[in-house]
Image (cartoon, rainbow, N blue to C red):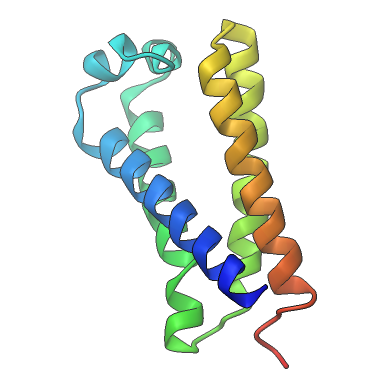
Amino acid sequence: MNLALWIVAGLLAAVMLAGGLTKLFVPKERLAAAPGGGWTGDASTGFVKTLGAVEVAAAAGVVLPAVTGVAPIMVPVTAVCWVLLMGGAIVTHLRRHENIAITANIAYLALAAFLAWGRFGPESFTG
């Protein structure tokens, strides 16, 4: 179980980091033209960049606390926050009828829920 949770944390961190860096450094116009990125055309540049920074922070939050042993409770807390973020993403993509993005968001939500459950419960770092 512990190995599965580490794999899920690594996969989520990679997704979070890639998505966050893309939102931080790719121009909004290019993001809006990409599949599933149409929502960025309706959002301010500041919002998109802030969301990118949040995603980069989340990538760190699902791995670094456990690796360093500093505040490892932040791993499942970050996973719960990712579940909430993916819930918002699902609603946004549902409104825009972007089915591929919805499917990906549901998968990320499920992985984050598994990580939160595992790290709060049977494989917590507290003991």
